Image 1 (cartoon, rainbow, N blue to C red):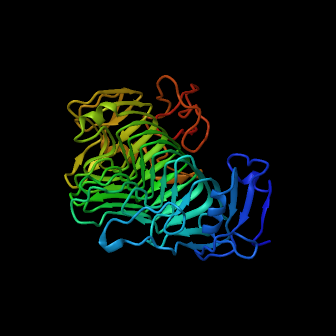
Image 2 (image 1 turned 60 degrees about the horizontal axis):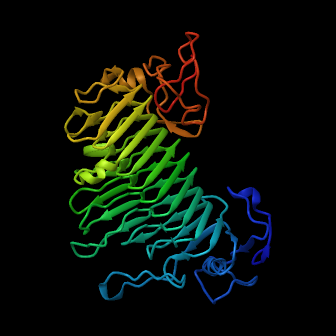
Image 3 (image 1 turned 135 degrees about the horizontal axis):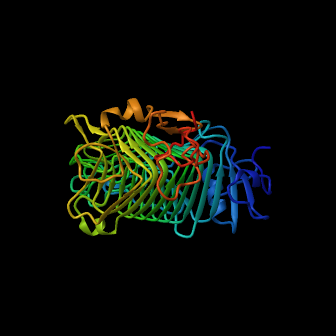
Length: 453
């Protein structure tokens, strides 16, 4: 029944966390971005529903239909000056001050489109936003967060963030440059089974490099079972930091692929740039492009104080087939039971898998399979790098719902794990297995666990 407002438990099964018994349920019945001050059975827009939720104690569940919800109330740019951040949910982005859950009917069919007028959501301190089964697109900001800016708590489940951007167009040097082409997180962010694709941070006139083509994190971040694909960070000086993710907070990422993300020529961290605390497990970095630097970079290229605090642990990670260095370290880096091979700078025709830069805090490797490149990284197992995709790994492909490099039968990574292993691989399938048929069970290196034969 369209356009009704009542208290219900009907969506308990659809949310990651159970609803409170008195959760308010609202059903949006128009795609127009309208606001007459109230959400009624006869007329309730998304903006009106969010305003009602902001004014209602406890959690409010807002149900969306199949179709496109366009942002239409522009936040004007007064006389060419920097736009004002309006926080009353009257114009521009949707301001969340309460406990709001939005439930769509699928990321491909329920879409929120900011129409390049603003970002879509601003979650304020103390507020909570849950998004499920919907898509966010068309966001644009010169401040932080092309689609979503978070200072509270946000949870994404089966959400697609596509073609959102931070675009700093003010005259150089723009001192207020934004970060996070899709999301800028300064609070608590959880991402589950979601996709970041074709998001951009254009720091064109910024005084500092654009950070986070898809996601900028300065808070607490958890990512599971997700994909970062074809995102880009750039700026006027051909830099950009973190084509997929720039982390300067605390990040815990697992069962996630970073593929075809990019920074410009002098940029760093085509897939991930870490200047905080990061744990990456059972994940794949492939096809990312950083001409002079790396796909995964730990530490900051010109701020030693950030390198000193940069700590990363990579467990069962495959870093292969990237353009540029696979791994570059300036901070404290631990590689456990991982593969770094088949990475090369195509412009220079050089194999570039792993490098530790002068002044790096520490580098440790346990169970590392490394393609030979003449660099200064040490590993237990070395392979001829030219054989990476003929004897060690298959090309990147979807396998059991995850984008991975499956192990070939002849791979040196099979049953080569050292010490403690994770209990599953990137696909969520069990480790450990006897992958080579010798009767001994041990885990494989990298994100993929092979079963014999």
